[in-house]
Image (tube, rainbow, N blue to C red):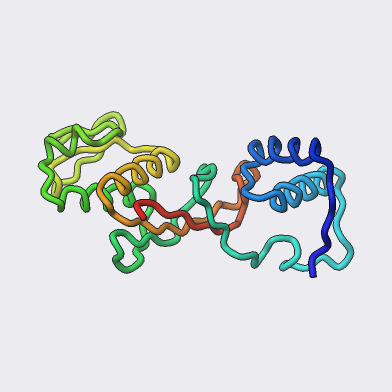
Length: 186
């Protein structure tokens, strides 16, 4: 059984504000992150700390809204209830764009619909890549921008996307070495 603590209303309000900055979903996550940050700052470790206790092997984090996606890699993506595929961020956007195109949308309309830079022609400068199967060129995007566009297209066109990803081992990553899941279009 987990211990129960009581805090004042003022402390709880402050905890909610801090949760926003830490991008935590629950009060428990907020407290865990605050304690872990302070332990690291002070150079402290719990006696007998095991891999399971310090974060390795933890459950997959589930997000309703996109967390910080810098320093991440996609582990798998299931698009339109298909089998999971191994892809990268650019490939994820491309697969969703293909699904939208397969709904009978012309490439001209598709270009107008996209909220990332795209052209109805072969154009391979300034970060654009041409996709012959679609007849369009799309400019490369950050992971966060890819997810925003995937989420928007998935909701608008009813294309379910189930994404599992991992933050890399980088101190600037939001949750280094952790695995997470996010969904769109459901």
